[in-house]
Every structure is written in structure tokens, then in C-alpha cells.
Image (cartoon, rainbow, N blue to C red; front, side, top):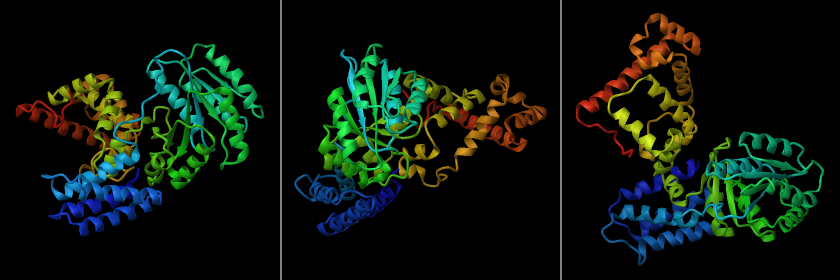
Length: 443
């Protein structure tokens, strides 16, 4: 995500960090390069111009910070400017589904932007918060829309109603909504029809639906990979419909950043969530401050730890696992659990994207680390629980059996066992030196 923009910005800022004093000349030169990087990332020209003026003022104006290194001062100013551009330091609040009364969340957007999948992601997210969510499909134009929503509803265990293909969503919508709300749901997420482009028929239909359903929230769903086209789509929708927020999908793809960085300034819409994958769990609250850090190559370790805690079963369990590893009590069962959690964090590209740039230099390119993790997991799955608890019993015949069962070679089994021994020795050595802890706090 934003790889090209991150590379350009970090290059510019690294150069000025190495200098001694900030002057109007070297700041202006750096900001010209920053502006060029933003425009190449498909940021709206007006947004880029305003951003540069803001950063220049933060760096050279009345807000200049005494006692801060000049290069760091510019980096800070750029970071603060990006946070402001993205909507401010605090994320937009999630809908309050705990105050009684049913909520109606209407999803709007063009065809292919990810509305149907987002409906299921929201049902899963709010379901994990203890809420019962209904899904209402009102796309009568796309033949497979109803079937797709039903499949996703089954996956997230949500009640669902869909309008028939060729039906009239404006007439059927209120009846189907009433049927869902009769099932004692806390909220209904409504998936609506889209088109390839904005047209009058679509806007008329959506305006009539909005009038008939009177939603609590109306969220515009935008494909982050379409850059300024997404912003233009947002302008067209907000001119006709009372939208209360936006959701950016496909932010895990090759997004240049223009949509995320331009949307709030151009439309005023707060970005509520971002989609970071195809699975129904790949949805995150939009965090402006964290995203600004990632754009500047600072990483987002907080999100990485939150994902790790979710995979581990909570922060307490994550802390307990860290203490166990640091105490030298580490067997192949633990290695197997850690590898499965690593895969649960997302692709290797997504994990590396959350680490500060300085920590990822020299690491394999995205994709290179995927196959080894899967093969290591297959080898460990082919072992018996006793073999994973007591690796010392794995002799030659057992190694051949494990290789056959995992579809790997004896050499790969041997390599994994050698890697495990090295890790185990390192953990015991840390304990023996009185360290007793990992190089980062877990609790």
C-alpha cells in the first residue's frame, strides 16, 4: 500500500534529515519534491497545494519548535500535515449499537467497489461486539448479487433478505426491512445496486431508497485503487445524497494513495473503515495517525500488535506467550502456533507494510516469504503431538514419514528442526544471561 509514495517521501525526508539547518531554500526544495510525489500518487492538485502551504507554515512559521533537530522538525510537520489531511488524529467513531433502537446502515457506491463483501464484514465486526446484524440485499440488477449476499450471510451467521432479480427495490425494500427487524436485530446493513459509472437512473433509485428506508447512516463505498476517480465519484454521490461517511476498499492492493489523501478535503466525508483483504475479517477502523506513519515509512506496530493479540486470543494471552518464549520453554507446538498466527496476520506483504522501513531493509520481497511459512506449517502438522512436544524422539524413520505426510523432503524436515534448535538455544541463552524478556514489552 502506497509503496511508491512512501519511497519518494522517505527519500526526500532522509536527505533533509542529514542536513544541519533548515532554510527557506532547502525547505522549499524539499517541499517541491513532496508536492511532486503527492501528484504522482494521484492526490488532487488543490489538496497537494494546500498541504504544502500548511507544512511550510508548520516548519518556518510561528509554530517552529525550538530545541528540535531541523530535519526532524520537517518530518514532524509533514506527519502532522498528513494526519490533518486524513481527518485529524482521532478516528471517526463507530456506530453506537448499544443505546437501544435499531440502526439502518445504507451502503452506496459503483458496481465492483465491494459493497456486498463490506456488508458481511460489518456484520462480522458488529457480531463480534455482541450485536445481531441483518443483511438486506436491494440490488435487483446484478443477477448474482442476491446469491453472493446469501453465501456471505451464511458465513457470518447473519439473517438475510434479498430482493428478486428484476424486482423493484423501492417498493420491496421497506417490506424486507420490516421482516428483518422483526427478527430482533440491532442493525440492518443494506447492500444497494451500482453501475459502472454514475448515471441519473442510479441516483434516482438510490434517492428513492434513502427516502423510503430513512437510514441512520449512509456510507459511500469507494475503491481505493481508482485514485482520483474515487474522489470524483464521491463528489457526484454527495451532491445528490446525504452521505454520512465513506469506506475505502482494496487498500491492501496497489493503491497510490490519492483517494485516501484527497477524500476528506474535497468532500468533507469522514473515512470510517478500510478494507484490507478479501476475507470477511479484513476490515479495520480508519486510523489517520497510524496511516500517516505508514506513509512516511514509520510503520504501524500498534496495528500489528492488535492483530497479533486477536490471533492469540487477547493481549493477556499474547503477554503469557511472550513470557513463555522468553523463559526458554519453547517446543514445536509453540512454533506451530506462532506460524499459524503469523499467517492469520495477513500476507507477508501486509505484515511488512506495518513495520518501520528501517526494520524491513534486507527482508525478502512480498511473496517470497509465503511458501516457506506454509511448508513449515505442513511439516509441523504432519508430526504427532508427542513429536511436537518432544522433538528429540524424531529419528530417521519418523523424518521420512513426516516428509511424506507433508509433501516435502527429508532435507526440509531437517532444516526446520535445525532452525527450531537454533531458536531454542537463543531463547535459553537469553534466559541464562538473566534477560528473561523479549526485546519488546508484551504486558
